[in-house]
Length: 117
Image (cartoon, rainbow, N blue to C red; front, side):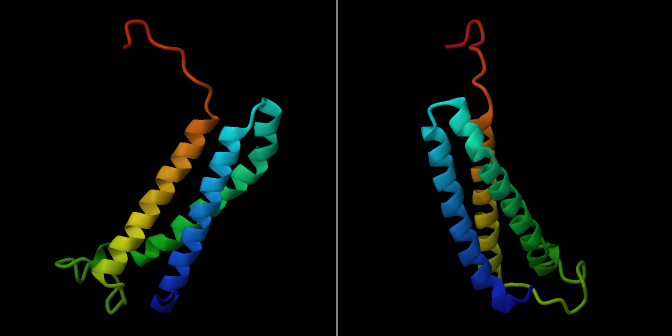
């Protein structure tokens, strides 16, 4: 994926984050296990797309673009500037957090531990 596609990747990620948030909202609003179950296929598809997107972003990072790390990556490899790298890393972290929240939403509530306040 070339540098010219980075803005498109960011836009695609933002759209995906919006879709995932809407799905989380719908799942939280589901009143019955049957309603939640009906949303599971969509949930799994969104999770897989998110993982694929994060995998595609990984080659954009790497330590070759970090100051002082030249020579550790592929010689002459183009890397995004530091601002772009930080933006992509932040988006990737946001997506991971969103995916973890979706997984937590699917887990049954744990019983309160004795002595917990």
